[in-house]
Every structure is written in C-alpha cells, then in structure tokens.
Length: 221
Image (cartoon, rainbow, N blue to C red):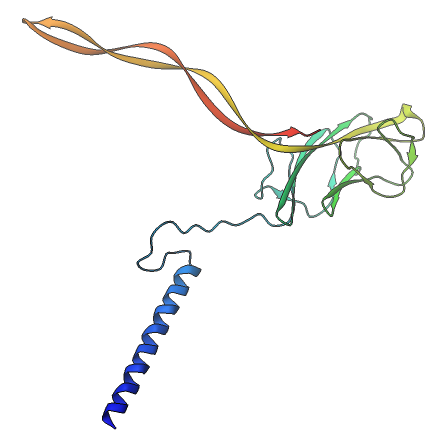
C-alpha cells in the first residue's frame, strides 16, 4: 500500500512540475522573450493593418502616417502621397491637385478611397473631363484608376476650368546619392630635438565621397 501511495505521489508531483514548465515556456513566448536555455533573437514585428495611409507634406507614407477615415478636401494646390494596404499587399500612388479657378472657401473636390480605389467627389451642377474625353456633367464619384488626369469645370465649356487632378501609380525605390564632405587628414610631422627624432600630429583639409541611401516614390508606367 505504501509503495502504491509513493508511486501516485511521484506521478502527481511530476505532473505539477511538467505543467509549470509548460506554463513558463508559454508565458515567455507570449511576452516576446526566449524560454530559459534558448538562444538567438526572438523578434516580434507588426505588419501594417489593412487601410489607406497618406501624407500631405511630401513624405513617404507609412503605417505611422495619417490613416484615411473620411474624405479629404482638396481646396488648395497640394500633392498627396498614399499607401494602400490590402490583404498584405502594399501599393503606392501620388495625387497632384492644381487649383486653377479663383474661388474661395471651397469644400470640394473631395478625395475618397473605396476598396483601395481613389475617387473624386464634386458638387452637383459641376462638370469634369477625363484626359481628352468628353466634358461630362457630374453625377457620381469618379474613380481615378491608373494614370488619370481629371479636369473639373464650373459649366460645360472648357473656359471655366477650376482645377486639375492627376493620379499616378508609384512604387517605393531605394536610391543612393554620392556627395563630397570636407574632412581632416591627419599625419605625423617628424623633427629632430636634442639629437632624437620626434613627431607632432598635423592635419590638412581634404574631401572624401560618401554614399547616402534614401527612398522615394517613383512613377510606374
């Protein structure tokens, strides 16, 4: 009886110890740390969430940029760089809006994104023209797919143009720029002092080339 009791206690204690070890390992992984005795680096990186991110200052959009949640009013000349993240795929584009009409206090046009496609919303009673196509009365938001140039007008004549919107698909590229910088070049200047050779450190100015890497959005054809 004592032997059976001893065996049961040993199994019970071993089960508790094993369970504690598994819990500790699970906790370590959840907190981004290596379990005891592990080696190497355990890095947790967050993928950007699906959505549209954009900048108005010329910077390259990232998942830390402004996230699109409501229409953007294009009431001034501005360049908008945007990044669309959908199902893990990232695409870029540039929208250039040039104001041509002398109209103040505008609340249009408005830039929207629906299912990853940029669209332009205009007030009723205005007109638009895509490329060299026909001048069309505005009724519903106009999609800017691919390389698109859109003019919007006050009426059906091309003399009342109020603005131009250009959409350009783009890709993110890494470039290198070589420049010259002024640096000190050190050398030893030897001289004799009391019959012994000594030296002093001296320098002169020279130039060297350095490489600087940067990223930019480049239009795709």
